[in-house]
Image 1 (cartoon, rainbow, N blue to C red):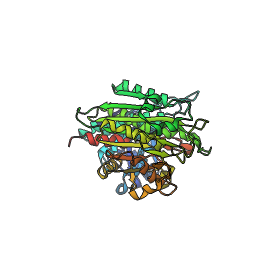
Image 2 (cartoon, rainbow, N blue to C red; image 1 turned 30 degrees about the horizontal axis):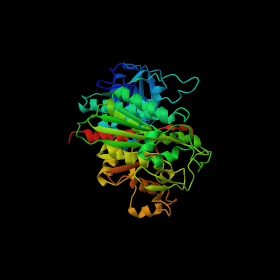
Image 3 (tube, rainbow, N blue to C red; image 1 turned 60 degrees about the vertical axis):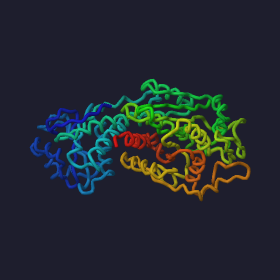
Image 4 (cartoon, rainbow, N blue to C red; image 1 turned 30 degrees about the vertical axis):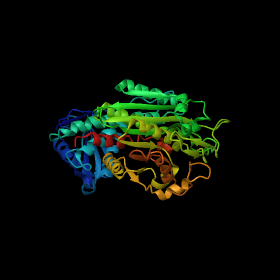
Amino acid sequence: MEFSIKQGSPEKLASGCVIAGVFDGGKLSEAAKALDKASQHALVALVKRGDLTGKTGSTLLLPGLPGVAAERVLLVGLGKAEELGPKSALEALRAAFRAVNATPAQDAALFCLDDAAGPDAAWTVRQAVLLAAESVFRADGLKSKPSDPAKFTRLTLATQHAPAAELETVVAQAAATASGIALTKTLGNLPGNVCTPTYLAEQAQALGKRHKLKVKVLEKSDMEKLGMGSFLSVTHGSEQPPKLITVEYHGGDKQQKPVVLVGKGITFDTGGISLKPGADMDEMKYDMSGAGSVLGTLEAIASMKLPINVVGVIPTCENLPSGKATRPGDIVTSMSGQTIEILNTDAEGRLILCDALTYAAKFKPECVIDIATLTGACVIALGNVVSGLMGNDDALADELQQAGDQAWDRVWRLPLHDDYQSQLDSNFADMQNIGGRPGGTITAACFLARFTRDYRWAHLDIAGTANKSGKDKGATGRPVALLTQFLMNRAAPR
């Protein structure tokens, strides 16, 4: 999808559809007032008749409005002007793009900057770009008859006044972020028989070719030499070979330490010998969403040529039961030398991540962030609204929380006190891989913390936010927007 920002008059702008807001009670926005005047007060007449209320998310399409150059005018309800904030602004934007996609319009001009439609203009522009891209995303490529591509392919962020110069950059960065989100969603939605560890490695290599990034793929034999006994224990039951993928983006100077992103890449998770219930097991194809978000973030920052160094580390494999699969009670040795008693083979994400986190130290990182659909307990604790955040550095956690708020891809920090560590005590090994039901999200992070003592580290549990279930089933692309914003903030001049 193409995006641009432009100054113009709503009534004079030639477009397939001009979009303007209306507040609760029929109060017209600045753009709607201009359209009303040009149409000899047709909009005021609609208000008086009760056709236009301004209720949040309501829409009214007016084809061929006299005195207006656009083929269509779409009026979108913004709710009460004094209560307009992020939630209502996003609801209005989603409704607007849903309505545009129901028309034959190929392009639209959205007047959203002349009245406050969010915390600030940059936020509004960024969200408009991301939601417009989301509205045309398709996930039916494997159907025998996929739906036609969306006709709506161009969005102009329009304003009656001269737009601030920095908004051009905001549009470009948001478009790059949307591209990264689309990649993450596409990978997440693919079934496990397509998106295998080998396929993920191929996609990383394709990303490397597109943006001239350094990509390295370690095979099982390489991991055996490195002593990654914890990672490899998860792979025993599968016929698919595991991969450890690294993708290096060098946008900063050579002396700059990289930010390392470690993404969990379980391409399908049955739970292994600790078999999951059959209901909804198909959604375990999303267990590689952490890996997908790393590739999506690299796609975004490489597209915008961000001046920062970033390394993606992706441990990827399947977790399946077989005669060769790891058994509950088995003890394995991690790359760090620490031994692990595996009490539940369905707590496998931490087993592959711990070796990847040990491996990440070789890049001498400025900080490390792992992203994983790690615990069902996080869904119980935080639902599907925010991702879980834990870590060993307050400043890093604060940075991520701020970036999440900016991007509206929010997180909530949970404690990581040493008091929880005793739940991982084992009689037979250095630790066990589960800590029981109490504080399951926290004890999973406590496990990872034992492998991250040499650097600043944060952990994002995206089990509740990486995908949706039910009739809206599909990958969300989160937390690409958060990670991209975090890296943009870091790359900005200080």
